[in-house]
Picture (cartoon, rainbow, N blue to C red):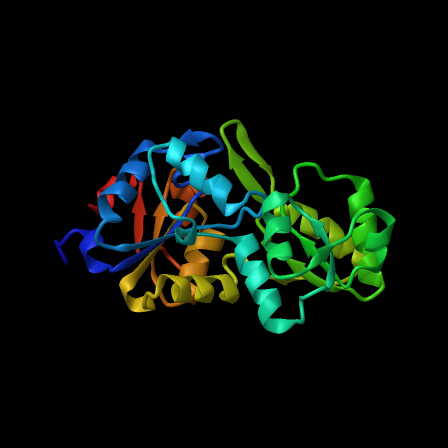
Length: 264
């Protein structure tokens, strides 16, 4: 059995945000302290499947909690989605209907896409679905019509829930399920645990899978995604998955901790 601190075994850390660093607007103090203690001499990339907010908004939110991170140390599923679209399609001037927040729209516009709204969006070349706390039936209808007309169908992530201080809210996956059902089509999903976001995160952090630890609070996204990418994984019990969920789950996380400070 190894007795060296787990943190010393890795050069890079991919760390989920929602449920790990904070829950809604409430910081997880031990996690903030952990990142501040290790970021000076190790590579840190913060990941989130939450597509709603911009990297600048995350930067400001983390700073208010005592954690200073650069924008290039933050990767959202919107960032990964835009990167995937740019690599696989001609996006300059392409039209898109987006279900999601300002973070998703900013990243799509950043690769030259033109966002359509209202009736014009029925003819959009792409439909991208993310987390939208202002979802309406009209938005679902437009997405369905565009998809039946042949639009490319992409989703930022498929998380069924979103962790908040008062419990679990419907996540992007709940919205995606409605659109997929009505359109009779499945989306290409980008966020954790899917390969594109995990591989992109490793590339951006310039890390190697065998020296990187994936830290998260969800077995079905963070732990599964890290394992698929060949990384060791750590489940922290501050968010969605609980200790009783670990028994019988495959793949098993390499570490299960109540606080990230245990890794020190």
